[in-house]
Amino acid sequence: MVNATDFESMEPKDPGVVLNQFDWIPGTHRLLFNTIVLTDYGRRATDDLYFLDADTRRWTLLRQPGEGGKFDVSTDSQRVVMTTPSQISLMKVDGSDYRVMLTYTVPYPSEVAYYAQPVWAADSKSLTVAIPPEDFYYGTTSPTNIWRLPIDGSAPEIVSQLSAGDSGDDARIWSPDKKYYAIQSGDKYYLGMDGADLEPLTESSSIFGWFSWIDESHFLYIGPCELRLGTIGAHSILIADLRTTDDCISSYDFVK
Image (cartoon, rainbow, N blue to C red; front, side, top):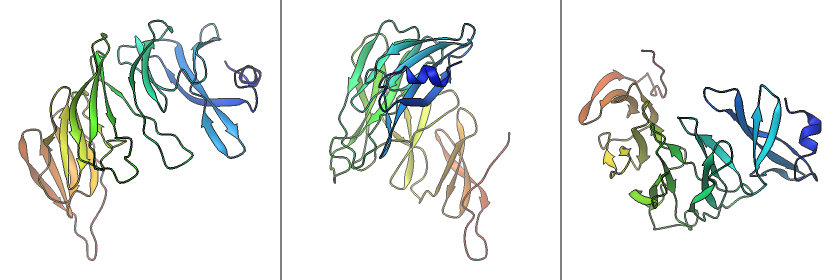
């Protein structure tokens, strides 16, 4: 549907781009994609955005390089959120109603730029995103802010904070209905939800990871050499002792 000649026509033509991210718009034969530049020293995101109709096999540029970014389509298939190293923006999937929702600066100590990771609410009416302080990678004493971004034009608001040193990146584990998220901070997991402060989700014992939601209110996690079943608003229950002869089992899987 998009061939090598098509990619050669996309900016920047020198050194040229290749496919980076793509995703279908749920319930349609249309998809969105962006590109990446291949350089002598590695890869660099172009931060563009394209639209492709699989039925007609026609593609259209929606956002120029630097004006698109990493993207995620809303659960109702109506809008797409885009992220660059400096801002989070929103528009309808046809490219209309574009606006910047939040700007940020998080200097990253490497050639790879920092990208925030907004997550859609289940009703597609807002997004939640963790934004670390500017000095996060340089011994910060400032907290990471958890922002709520309404799509109706209302001002973004800080709904909770993480302690200094916790970025929230890749750590938020969303419940199946996307009403809650679990996030690890120090030796505990905390429960977050839209518009509310973080609350302890697990007891104050060491957490070794492997947190998994079972359904909207129950979850499994590994504590110190034990597998525990948790319930929102209640104490966890010991499911299994994970001690072996000289170590502990450190992972699990489950089926309903």
